Image 1 (tube, helix red, strand yellow):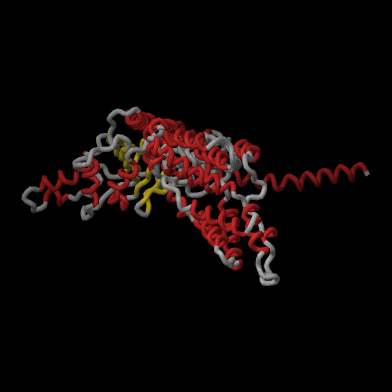
Image 2 (cartoon, rainbow, N blue to C red; image 1 turned 90 degrees about the horizontal axis):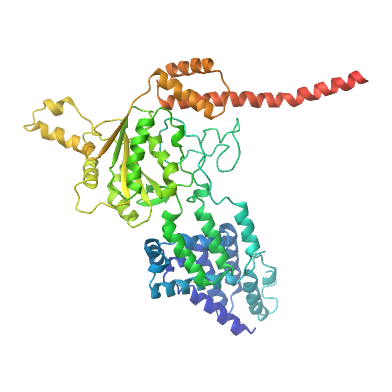
Length: 531
């Protein structure tokens, strides 16, 4: 191949990266930009090997760090564009010919980029290298000695991808033990043994906290990883581009588009949605003593998922009684039906219209989860929430509800002066503050358990974690813990069982450390006796 043909090929590749129409945001990715810079440098009429060398190693470093071509498959899967949104709404049959043709052409460009391997790039650069002045770049390794970012990858490398599929779980059940009443948000605080890494905790259970990730690496029901592997297979030569278009359209129709198709739980942060990689997964069957409350919440949620009218819900009650856990347990129970959770802080409520707009039109159903919601009498944010709940001109979306937890029945701080003040129409001020709670169509009250209920929760959690402690001793320790700490609640029971599990686990670990030494001593004594 002549150097002119080499430069022409690099120039063609450079132009092609600027041509995507449907997937046009791909060219903003740092790795795709690095490819473009490399191709532009190699296409120059007067080769600048300092520039080519630098650009090549930039591509190589990013490709190895991000994983090529898996990174491109991820970009395609997560891209929000007209094709993915139309396919999510109507499937492959809803794509008009122009949109389908444009998407097909863009994906052909992506496939051609993957086919242009590191070795082919180096062979082209080698041709340009051979025309340089001898000795000009003597201190630089010749191109064929440069590292490659796709070693072992070839077109149609189905074997490698098959091994990936076999080695990766496509759907991971959320088998964790949701312990009574938790507080806090949807994201897990950290990874304990027994989480998504498949390791066991001290007692052979799912982990120190008795929970397990709802979605390994954040994927929704394992479908995300499987979809990425299929897309990667198409990019590396498996099947036709037309089949790839059909596959992506089907995926979006079943799972939605963009970030919404990837995660089960989200957080509104920095004025945009962010996926939660390791959501706090709680099982309904492990929430002891809350049968009535959970049944009411489940009934409303099932109406919502079935497409019927359902109410926004206020979960009210004492601290540590399981309000937050009840909401988080819905994710595990109904994720297969398309339920997703979006965590909102109180400060994010001012963005509530934007949150709803970002979810509008998605095939999934979303519960906006606001934990520990309350307002002081000087705060005006509750008025914005009132408008969104009821009273605004914008129609309510059919795929969004708000579930909020609070320790205050009426959400807004009340004073005796509100009723006895010198305002002429004092009742109007009271009604103004009560009206926010009234706009939650369903209020579920969570009460602190009595002693019998508290001990039932402690026993249930201990048995679930496989702790072998006599009931009488367990109850005595649980009551002593309750008196010394935060009073009777599901959260207190869980904290007690956490302590108990840690104590037993540490004791077992100490025994295991001592046993090998004792065994060696006994063995030595036996040999000495024989002598």
